Structure formats: C-alpha cells, structure tokens
Image (cartoon, rainbow, N blue to C red):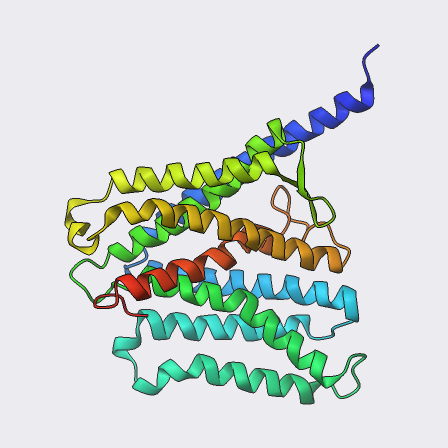
Amino acid sequence: MLNSNKFKSKTGAYGDLFQRVVVHSLVLTFLVLLLYSSLFPLTSFALGFITATCGAVGTYEYSSMAKAKMHYPLSTFSAIGSFLFLALSFLSIRWGHSLPGFFDALPWTLLIVWVVWSIFRVRKSTIGALQLSGVTLFSILYVGIPIRLFLHVLYGFIHTQEPYLGIWWASFLIATTKGADIFGYFFGKAFGNKKITPQISPNKTVVGFVAGCLGATLISFIFFLQIPTRFASYFPMPAILIPLGLALGITGFFGDIIESIFKRDAHLKNSNKLKAVGGMLDTLDSLLLSTPIAYLFLLITQSKEFIG
C-alpha cells in the first residue's frame, strides 16, 4: 500500500523545488539585465535604489530576529538607517567624481549619528544601551558593508579604459557564489545523507558542500576560458580565477551557516516568509561573506586600476 504521507512530502518537495527554480530564474534574469545596464545613468540609479532597498529589508529581518530574541524595539529605525547608508554609499561610489570631496564621509557620519540617536531615541527600552547600540550598529553593518563593497566591485573600474570590467567581476562573484549554492542544494537534496551541522542547518550535507565547491570551481573555470580579449591586460595570472572561485564558494557556504546560527538563536526557520525564497537574508547570506573576499582580492591584485 502506498504511503500517502511520504507521497505528499515528495510532492511538496518537488513543488517547492519548482517554485525555487521559477523565482530564482526570474530574479537572475532581472539581475543580469540590471547589471549590464548599470553604467547608464537612469538604470544605475535604479540599481542604487534596489540595492539600498535590499539592504534595508535585510537589516529589518536581522533586527526582527533580535526582536524575537531580546525584544529589540528599533527594527524599522535600523532599516531606514541601512537604506540611507547604502543610498549615500551608492552616490559616493558611482558619482563621487562629480560630488564634493566631503561626500565620501557622509555614509560613515550618518552611521555614527544613527547609532547615537538610537540610544537616546528609546529611553525606556527593555534592553540596555549597550545591547541596543550594538544591535543597531551590527544590523546595519552585517548587510550594509557587503552591499557597499559589492558596489565598489561593480563600479571600481568605471574611471579606467574598461569600465565594464567591474560588471564582469560582479558577475563572476555572483555566479560562483550562487552557483555553489545551487549545486549544493540540488546534489544535497538528491544524494546527501551525512549532515555537516544538524543542529544549526539540518539541510547542509557533506555531499552538498563538496558539490558546491565543485560547482564554484567549474563556473570559475568557464569564466577563465571566456575572459574577453579586451580585459586580458588586467589578468596577468588568469588561472588564479579558479582557486578564487573555489574560495568564494567556500566562504559563501559559511555565510549561509552564519545566518543559520542567527535564525536558530531566534528560533526561526526563515528570515522572512517570501514564497520560495524565505527572506532577503536567506537570499543574500552567502554573498555577505564572499563579497568582502572578492573586494580584498581586487584591492590587492588590481591596486593600480581598481578604485576601492
């Protein structure tokens, strides 16, 4: 006799998988179009608004986890601070050459003012000033700094002879990091049995981790084979892309684990309830750790051209 519960669970799993594929395919298509038009004024402002909004939503989700854990009262306040921090960061990174010199300091000035304001804004909070300021600061930095660094990667070559090189690097970063996620998810679902961190992230398996590493390596190898001739002078050692892609895949995995630790501490399954996605943090978590690695790599290896 057919086990109806098992059949339903498999059907539900396939339905969830189909929804994930559809949603992420649409998001990826939109992202590719946005990235490759990000040097045009109008679309660059659209990208700036979208990245600031994503940062605000991610900050709100982290603050909501803190609220579930310790009754943190400033989720919306932190989200607004994150949006303003990233909006100012976008303007200073993308249009800094057209703005007064002091504009570069505005995002950091706003961040300091926002944290200090948060302490005085809630005088009768259920948590102390140390916790309040700490959560406010970290909730903005946890999401805001990686997104700011992503903007640096995207626009870091805008004043060179090859401004589209930044788009290439941003595409490489996203493809290797999210590619590792996708390979790990599919192979982990299909063949994974041995769990890596069952208490933190029960869906993470050894097979999924290995598949993710192989996937990131494969994708970076494809990028290595397809380096445009016009960019060749920027790659004195192009083969380094392969270990870099692997490193981004591995750090992306740990970025996912870190967010899972936060969710477990707050007794939450997902950072939000978006269909087939979970939440903004569930989507960005791997990139939050891999983006600083890519930024540091460019800062070290492309120091003459890259504007960090």
